[in-house]
Length: 386
Image 1 (cartoon, helix red, strand yellow):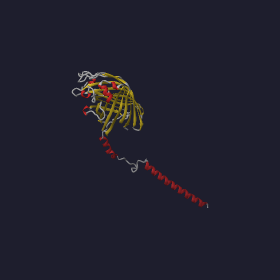
Image 2 (tube, one colour):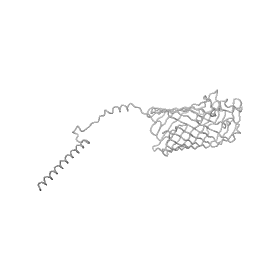
Image 3 (spheres, one colour):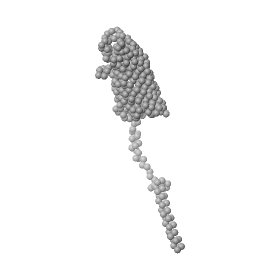
Image 4 (tube, helix red, strand yellow):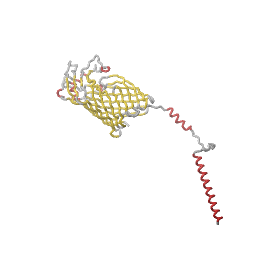
């Protein structure tokens, strides 16, 4: 009995040792395949075929990189904007008018209770590629004048402002052409029809005013771009050819920045977060407005006088822009409007008199007017780009 028990126990031990030996061999084989340590076994080591990356290398060498038109932290571009502009009361002193028929006509003085109007603008991408960005836009601005005693106005210009107001509408285009990953060209052009016309009674298109600007710039980093150029502009009423400076920047913390197109506008930007921004600065605003409707009921028919209002103003302002929902933003402005020019000029033989930077020429202004300076407010609803 004892001999039989010893024989069974020995067989079990032998079986267990055999199984453990087989399992150990299998585990060791798997370990050698996964992480070969024995470099003397050539079948285990697999060399990488680097020739499969040859085409990738050639493609990278042949491609050209272009700089982006935006930098980090910049305020979102407005694709569509609908707003309302409101100026509080101010005083307007209108000079006498030197007409072709009579030497002088009626100097006058009046109080403007408010001047206001709607503003619409859109800027839609036409081509958006890495090597070219082209946008087309349209705009409509109006300025309505509410005088304290409109029935007592004597000056023809004041009567025209009271009855018709001023309007400007036009088309614009912007082309951003990167030259490489740093340098770029920026072109802006516009054609505007500005005057005292009304809807349904438009002026002839021959009174259209053309403006343009060309900038050569550099995008030196993800947070800075600058440029220099030249512009043909009516921003302060007179036609001028002026040098311009373009400079946008954002600090390392994405909290402070600048957005400058000098001398047209310049702002310091404070970014509260990605959906709330504050701005402080100024903008030059204005245009040359044709006095086309005139006052046909009186002896002073302004339509036949070739007269234009050279309107220009400086707006010192604070702006708060914030997101209402996704890409729908609101902009609220408050500031002080400073009159730069509100004079009336006569075209010479149908051609505009050019005065560099508003300096006097041989042809005097028909009227030299004075406006006091009010507070103003502006609110707009905007659809911005992603």
